Length: 458
Ligand code: F0G
Figure 1 (cartoon, rainbow, N blue to C red):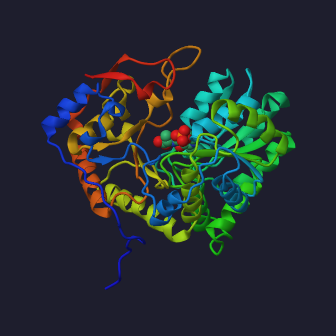
Figure 2 (figure 1 turned 120 degrees about the vertical axis):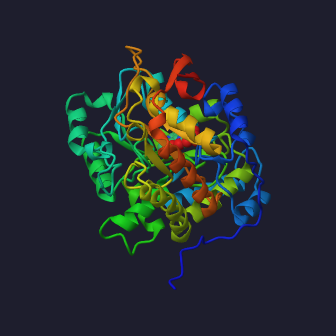
């Protein structure tokens, strides 16, 4: 018999989770106004809300926590982080921040001003939020293939070079301070960006004397896909691939809560000393002194160890194969998924799942509600709610894809949990014809409404 694939780790510590009844879930969801961000986590059986800050640290990371240096200035933990970032990404300067959006806040305080245009590949919502908050505009230049949910393309996160050139040609140079490349591209399905695309985007951007900033939350998963799918990289190590990826960038923002496998943290990496110095002023103001910036020494230590582990092939192979394992089960049952499967999550095409529900009734959020009721599974909407309203017209922005994301935390759930999730999704799929109405918004915030929105089932 061929030996099956098995996780390349064993478990040293466990956390109890509880099942619930359908009646309990009905009640809890009503109390949460049909917004799963309002649910108490104890009321969730399998939490797929996010892969951010929800990973399990390794024994080595925990041991690093014990030897963190909590000095306000010049801590050894800071110096260790500096060395790790230089080795891995090739940036000599960095600033620690408390998480990814804080890195965006600090960097954009220097780079973005009113009226600017920031092209990129489907900017993440906090990234877009920080751009729009400064009265600048985020322009999506993702390749068209990314919006065809069943089409196979190995690098659906890629930027369309002709769309990007057009943005540069139609604007004055000083209005485009940077191009943001998000690896992997979360918003369009956890899809990777190829090395070739990074190289070409970098050449084009530099021709216009602008900067390439990599939004790096899932950089290691992106490197894994380059190794697996791009010609010429099969024999390279993940660390070598990462090093080349960042040779094309001028700066990076990082949410360490994903591919650095820590529960909190972030940083900005800089090639340009002058930019680092300008950003330092904002870092001190918003985050903390430049050698800790919102992080404890112990957390910086765990982060360094996490970066090292996350850029090992075996870890990534276990991780991404678990996501594929779940996807294969769903596909075998006919559930419409965004293809190919992303690195950190499975994206269900909610519009294809519930073809009868009108788009005004928040189709993807309706599926989120049904998954919770079915199995106590908490997923997240990546659809009309997240896309928010147009800042000028205040009309709903209907995205090209109405998706539900099942984000898989790193090293947390076993394949039995994947079997359970698959069964719950398939059960909802089997009764999809009975679900023809969605939700109505009763109350929402002016920006990033999905976190606090109050909804009513129709
Ligand atoms: N960039 C990307 C691509 C992200 O996915 C996130 C967060 C951020 C930036 C912001 O980082 O949360 O540390 O402030 N994504 C989480 C998610 C929240 O669920 O996908 P943060």
